[in-house]
Every structure is written in C-alpha cells, then in structure tokens.
Length: 111
Image (tube, rainbow, N blue to C red):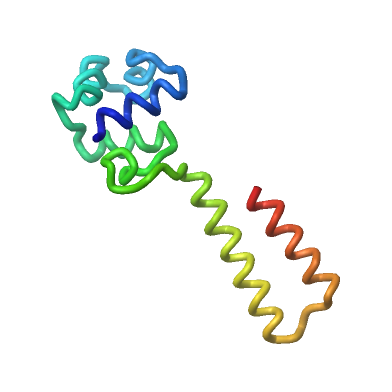
C-alpha cells in the first residue's frame, strides 16, 4: 500500500523520484523501491515522507483515507472554537452580537 500511495502523492505534486529523494535526503533508488513495494521505509523515513507530502502515516500505510494534516488542524481548531462558544453560551455572559461574530470567525477559519 505504501508504494501505491507514495507514488500517487508524488505524481499529484508533479515531482520526479529524484526531486523527492533530494527533498528527503534519501536515495532515488530507495524511492523507487518504496514505490514498487520491494522495500519498506524505516519509521523515521516514513515520517519524513508523510510530512513532506502533507499526509498522515496512516494514509501512506493504508490504515486511513486521505485527509491532509492541514485539513485536520482546521477541523480541530473549529471544534475548539465551537466548544468555547458553547461554554460562553452556557454561562450567559455573551451578547447576541458577540455570538454572531464568533460564528463568523469559526466559519471563516473552517474554509
């Protein structure tokens, strides 16, 4: 699974194996072997690959569907902002105008 998804993400970014290997400071032949599933990357290399391509290790290993890390961060941030809003609503210490402003801010960050 690593090979297929690694190659897929590399090609999506219009990178050659050489460009990716240079960026990760590993050999081009290693990238080729990973993509053809002839060899699996060590964990530290897998982390570098996932970080560089903006995907999770779970995605590369076939454990999860694709969700870029930055999308995950946006979701978490939005959820935290909604929780903050709910706490303020429960305490009745927020004006209607402030509520509207907070909702707009949450929606803006979620995009």
